[in-house]
Length: 287
Image (cartoon, rainbow, N blue to C red; front, side, top):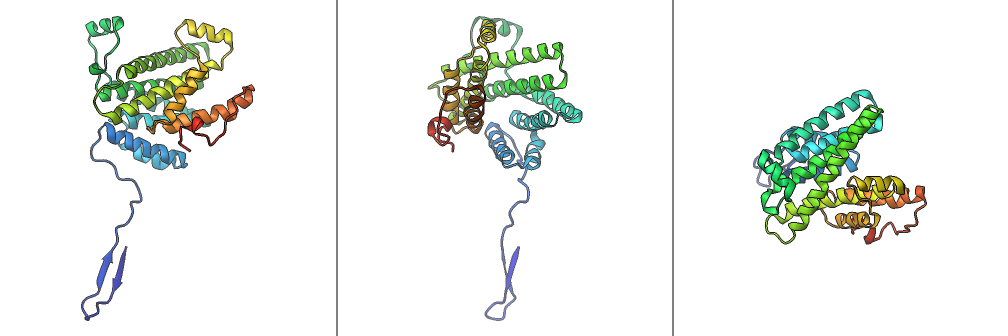
């Protein structure tokens, strides 16, 4: 855009040039953990503003090289598949989530046979994992949950139910390990922003698991607790509230989970949890 004007001394007209805004968000020339989280946050904002195509365009260039781009890209397609139930959408979502799992797997800590056996005897220490490896565990667990969801949608039979259940169990165990790692990492030096983002993912996962499992009938919950799950409602709500106030990538997801629980689940199930929608206790100050 340019504005043309005549000079006072009869000289050639001058042009005042203005920089045009980008029609599309430019593709990053390099990608590290911090940049990938920032771009995934931008994509999440686009999705929440109903701009799915723009979000996909932003994530697509790096979806096979960045764990967060892979997670975000697959999440949108999986959400589309679960909303339309179209066969082509389900197939596209399943293909993308498999690629996302492979991408996340490349960033996870590689262990030898001896290390794998020793890990059964002792937990990972904070120093044994890099920041990218810690985030890869969270992204991998979220991708497993998405694949389990599509497995249930794709085939409604007992085999698919068992396969989906195994994926959910694996995802939950990863979250439990990450929770232990998060507790051990308190006060440890390093990239505080990366740790804050990691902790936000842990609180979202652990909080959602505990909250949703607590809604199951007591007999089923006792059975699930026997095989390693936990369904503590108060603990789940507290984790989500802390995650909502963490100002991380997943803080808005914690807020949405809390809103869904307090405004819909409590109403449907007749739970007595009156809460003020604008209160900081519910949203962690996000609204």
